Image (cartoon, rainbow, N blue to C red; front, top):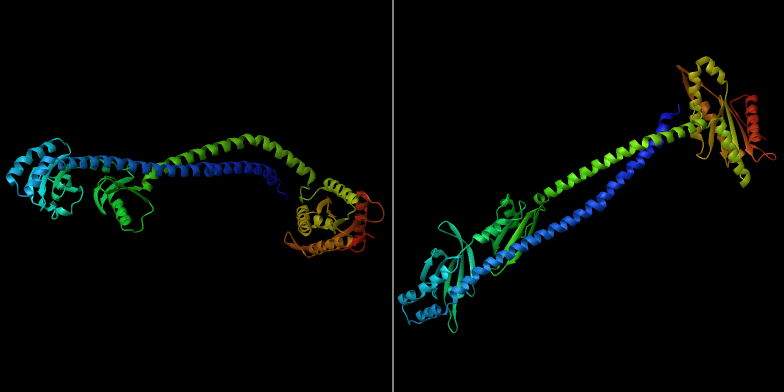
Length: 475
């Protein structure tokens, strides 16, 4: 039977499909033109934020180290005690006189600085002459002071349980070169504080000198990030999750590295984007549901009308065009054929002895046979052909732009397919035959739709009269 329920739902489902597709396209546009560009802008913003943070940290470290270098320069630039050291080197004064003269002046310089915690002065041979404040282990003395050309920072070293920075300052005199050096102990608290700041939980800073880590910032995962830095410095492949940026810190000539775990850094962003996406999806689903609910009454009215139209045009049992609709289509097509000088054929087909089927097997079996024959008709013709149930067990097929010979061949093929079909009627196998008549326009003289129908009907009658199960073509 014709699935009227499905036909009734088809337009409704189509509209829902269009509305749903619209929302899917809207969501795709939101992702393509909203989320993705936002992701690109966020990545660019992240890069700028990382670069700005690293640059600011380098500037802060530079300020601290520059102040240390200034203190070291000030200690070394005191002319009177430098000249006294030169006199000592030339043997003009003794060690006792040098110490007595230099100690108070170096002590004044030490007291004037909050960052300096100790100073030791050495001669050109590396012998310690004076020591004030925190003492430095001899392992940190220079064995070749003459090779010291500029202030050099070293550290961190542990003195009395506290980490310090050491600054080596060459003492130079015009015409004599290196006459000694100062070893100054500096506070490193500000350096540690800057490096410990880090880039939130995601980033750790490392202060490095010649590949050796001097200071490592605090963080949730310092070891994996230290391993990532070691791999980076060694030129090995780096895990994609890590981003490493670095800048030179002057005047010490050290390098400050910032290692950011991008998975950790992006986790809050991903969480926010996911929340936003879920919110948008929920809102879109709500709007879609409300749209569907609001459209349902109007769509049901439209589809109900379409269903009524369909019922008015279609035979309820076979799904073919009913008698009235078939006649309307025939008249329309014949008008077009006459206007354009084309050809049109009409088939009339009638089941032979169909009454016996209803009488012997019941009307349900008769209906099943009619449905089967209608299915054979649909599968045998073109999309442009129009099949119809003309009445009872009689069928008709309109064949636009088909001549008499081609129509006869088609009718014969349909007749043969029906004859070859075995019908199971309540457990009994029955074979059924049909008779068919063919009429074609243009025929003899002018023809109306009624004339063409009468001609096809006459051919059908001739086929019946000739013994049934055959096709007859009008002369």
